[in-house]
Image (tube, rainbow, N blue to C red; front, side, top):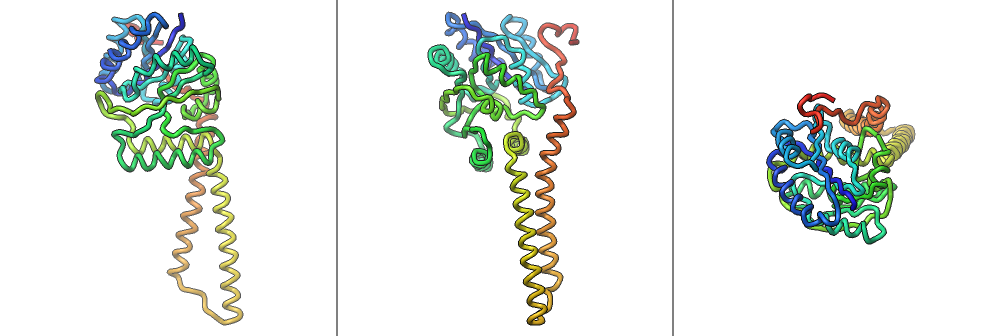
Length: 317
């Protein structure tokens, strides 16, 4: 019988975890003749009682395992830790808020068992609960990254997917510190079937992703999978140099032939501010790539474990 590992990153999800476990456990009961299951919850430095809930689940269900980080390392690190700890023939990543319907899990498993796919992934057909600003930037992010990236970025793609062990091992082989999982899943390739669904409201708690975090996450994706911004910075620099040469030629010509005086300081100040702003913008693009390179060269661990269900009493690794 095949085994399915369910990886669940958690950050301040104390209210969602019992509801999530109850819902998914019902699905595992209907599938118990088809597959065995294990739960791998990753506590990503929560400040509420998330760890307490995970300890309780591990005490009453031997299928439940948990990893608790020493601090908040981010969802990407939590997903990596869960994938690394998984032992199943198939591995799925799910959020604890139940916005992605666990009821799709049986269909996803059947597809992998009966069809020649390595992954069944999900994408949302709506963005219920998103603000207008978030919807607008999400839409344009996928349009932009789809144009400048060499890999496919599917609009509306969710983290909820079921993968074969071979694909999971391929993802784990990329041990980069700055991680953008949606891009990594696309980068490793493998045959993927997409299932569409309507995203639901959170069952409890509040989202941990504000606009600032989502913007940073978008920048992470662009920097990780495209060098187009660097080319853009070079082109902008060339264009402004060309404009400067043309303007200088015009000014010199007008002064020598018609004796036209050079314009005053307001126009000069505006030009200086414009050119200075463009220079800082391009320097910022280069700095973003340089900072990612700097972090990668440090070779710091992607996460640090403080506690698991195996050593919760000793509280040491």
